[in-house]
Image 1 (cartoon, each protein chain N blue to C red):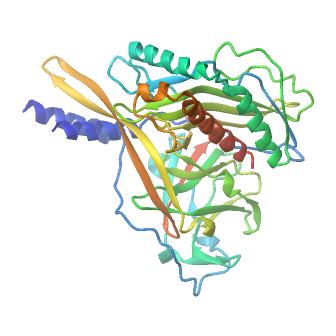
Image 2 (cartoon, rainbow over the protein chains, first blue to last red):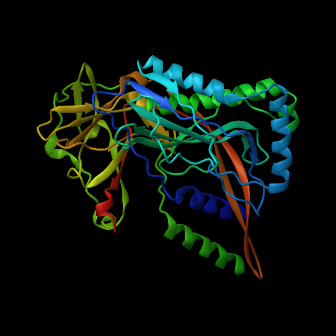
Image 3 (tube, rainbow over the protein chains, first blue to last red):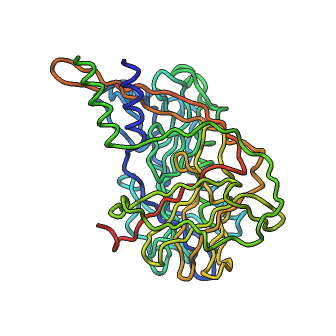
Length: 230
Length: 215
């Protein structure tokens, strides 16, 4: 009987979340040739979230997190990443620039203050001569566990491309790698099976591999965003 | 008795929240005999993307269409296969259309979408690299431009023989009923997906109405 309830509730939960409404890409007149990438694409701390228990909250990744256990685990994971001086933003932005270059689009970084919250910017005026501004807002990155399962990389990002002259939104999408709950309308990417950890000790004892797994996930999200601009 | 009532209530909630049907598990179709296929799509037989009567008031509605050889086939660019052509809503009445193939038990249709004008002339090819999985739908999103009327879905032969392999997480909810009410207990699960890209399968068109059409 209990299994019946589990199945019914799982079907209901998975099928009925509010859909996300994206803005499909519209190329600017003459095609896209240059992009300025807004600063502060990645938050400072990684997450280490686990579907755990009641008294929990849904995040963008859909993780249900026990706050006390989560804080302790997140701290240990970030300490491990700090031990190898892990700062993914520079790598991520360089990777994005290279991905654009392969599509003959000249991309450059735009200087700007850090975001106060992990939300889209409100001002896109300073494009430094670029045709459009890419607001790549990674809202969460790190590792996630569906609950008594394996730890796998996870990234969630909101991505917006804005015409630098008209201010028109040329594209807006939400990309989530390894969500626990899939929000309809969001792009869903699968984690790389090469980066898997058995438990917290397994994660913190391999900081370089831990960092490499997040890098790999971030690059997959970057590729997806660039491929949307077709 | 209490357990039976609780189960009935759970079934009732599920039935009102969503309706799901489980399709039969079919293997991927890896070859297709293109003998006697048409060279141009039958636009007169296009599937309408207008909402059905029950979907009239919805801001977002979905139309599912089987793509099999039973409904005719098309040969274009030396590739033969089943196809489906949609008659899109009038320009300006939709915000966007998400058009893609649905993951089935063992297969997924390998789609490629071309937009046509009212005479069947190509206006735009939706670049295959822009196809992404949105949940269980391998899809592209686009906003129809003025003059674009039909969306032609044919087979992308490049993916036939490949498989979609993925790891998906999920949450199940265990509802515990007591004499004082019910509480939910969540637990996670992990599944591995492996579907073969196929000449046949199911297409899903999700239509997002334009804001002025919203109720």
